[in-house]
Image 1 (cartoon, each protein chain N blue to C red):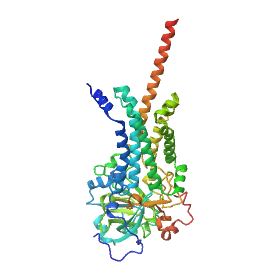
Image 2 (cartoon, chains in turn blue, cyan; image 1 turned 135 degrees about the vertical axis):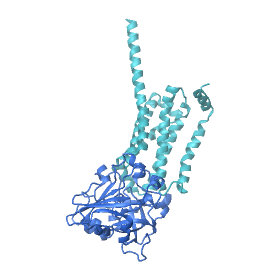
Image 3 (cartoon, rainbow over the protein chains, first blue to last red; image 1 turned 60 degrees about the vertical axis):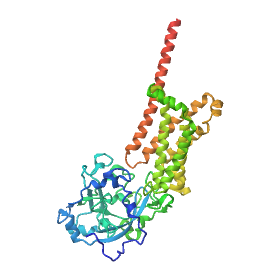
Image 4 (tube, rainbow over the protein chains, first blue to last red; image 1 turned 90 degrees about the horizontal axis):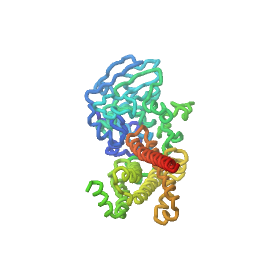
Length: 267
Length: 214
């Protein structure tokens, strides 16, 4: 079920991909600890079968959707995307997944809905980081509806034609390639359509550092560090820094979503 | 012979240069680990952070010398200068890794130092350490006299700046960094209490002296 169709998607970037070893060993997934290697160490405890997603709020067909049922109704494909962490490191990841808009049409979005809210599994027995107060659990993220419907926005179930490693957010995670990595919420169990801007975890912790939009923007610094450059993971001790691209290189596809918006205020 | 006596006896026989050799090679070992894939997918940050933690550990060890002597009679004073000089060396390598391997771009380095408070604080701590490193020799101790002791009290603000620098890097309140800062603050609080006690007993002594004179 995880195999991607052979035709390359026009949304896939023609870039050299980061090694799976690096993608699956250097992670931020605070549910398993705040260290970069904690997720790879602890995520094996997570049970991902069975898995279901509760879709609710302003939808015509609310309910609990089993992951197998969802995967039977969507088209999986490979998407090679740039991935830029707010901490200034970056990767190129060959995701396997399907467009979020396919899931949303399964549930039937109502006309008044303006935002999509997401929640990660809360299961402290299997996610030791949730026994600490590093963040407010469960992890929450959100998108404006037009961002969520954009064909670049996917729900990923695998990497390199393999099932998603647990430390990368198995079995189902969001990927929004033009936003900082923490927007791409992992191990999703709840999707809610709403007409109000949803609360998001990092924004709740420190709004001056983590805005609701969190679009990759080399001109807007994180208050504690510049976002002008990034370090590609996998280049070793002497890897050169690279300039960070506006919207992480997806300016042509997504800039119009923010026409007329002040991207400093709405960072 | 008690355990402390035995450690003291062993420490008297240990050459100080041995500590310098181990300390000098430690960052080289870390560098080798980082270069050979032993520090994970992002070796630059790993090496930088490991060196920073090493410097803080050495700094804390140096701050432990006096309380250990006062509380349990453990005498490591012979090694204190070496510990201090090595701390400066670890911080210097930490700074070099940040400059050359991490930030890389000269204009960005300058901007970071001016605009990013945790880096400003780290740089301030480094600059304050320079006069201490320069005067860590017998000639300076003789030449400066009592002023040498005063100058080297700079290590207290340096320790606070170092601990705060570590705490400020975290995206959340990192337990690791908070533990370092707490240990530093505890070691400094011990000194504040000792000074207050000494002052009190001096004042009491003076009162007793005055009374016996009258």
